Image 1 (tube, one colour):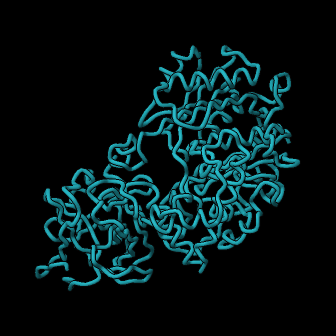
Image 2 (cartoon, each protein chain N blue to C red):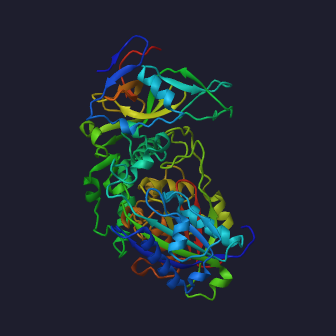
Image 3 (cartoon, rainbow over the protein chains, first blue to last red):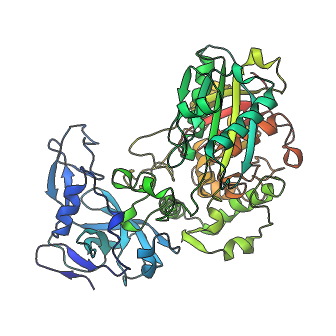
Length: 154
Length: 393
């Protein structure tokens, strides 16, 4: 079960093998996203002009073409748009999680994010309501993962 | 099309689809180039443009290739060696001859896959999965989505659910291509495959099964292009490049799906493909109904469906039914990927399909020969396309 402190994202413990930290290489554009996530906060780049969020963390607004961004908290709620289930061991750290589910989620804030469904969650389906949580890896990193329960700070 | 000389493929060399093990990239390239030169009757000294589909994670840069293969060239182009760039490389060669920047363009493709599957942490492909934070072609490594098949699987489910289609319909694509591969002596997978074989194969990333995914392979291929005028005096029946259009990019394009499915950052919308209005048809002066055989970039089987829709062979949502009943098999209304394609011949980064097109239009395809083949199209889910003809116009 995810655990959650007041006013922050739910947390999911890493249930795979070892530390998959080598799979996360934040770029200068995404570093802030992952740093905030490790602190339990979900933030996105918003346009300083039209205020719309974007993902991935592009340097220019895809809607109004304004350069630059402001990092702001965003609500973590969304709906499953598509899902896939991995049956093959591609990397050893994920082997104990097989078969694991990867979701394409439409967040209510207006962006889509691809991330795993947490272990022990129900069978996924298109249209399922989910919430973004932080999966904590042994090396201290955190990555987005989706859960179906847990009260949002929003 | 824009004015300029007619351009034709006059030589082709395919030195195998398979593993090259200890052989160097330069050696594979050298064998392919020698085969293409011998096929055409051109001499090495005739080549003045070099268009490479070699590089990252293994390979050589153009300067080394030119030096090691004793080529003297004045125009060079070398993109990243993803399969999606095959028509971009061929198109650059076509453009250079068309613009009279060169008189004889040589395309060389060499690909040596890693010892393990793409995405595996020890595989040669893995470094590219993690470049610039990851996720460059349908991958999100930190989410456990460490290979392109994850994006293809997400797009496949979105497509089949949108159109309320039975996923079982997908089997017709790998089954048809396996049948074709049985007639192709260089295909890696020639064993007969039954519907039960397909359905009992394990999932790789659900809903995609083993036989929905291409067969990892190495490729060595070389093609020579020159003007139609010069082609007339050479050894082989010329295969003309009748029309070309480039790869599409943008926020709504998705490498392993079609626009509108909403995978990753692409928007969700009702996709109305340009179909027969795609510029490649106008440039070639033909319509989809004129095409005798279609070749798709089929890293994953659903890409055949999306290509059929994108280029106007059927309406959106109809491709899964369109491919049933033998229609895309050799002898069917629209033979598709008659070499077996990437799904059964092997993942040739597109070049095995170009070799097949050349063989078909020269009437050298043996048991696989499509009756009366005069026009063939290469087309991908990303919008790039080439129309090839046995006739100049």
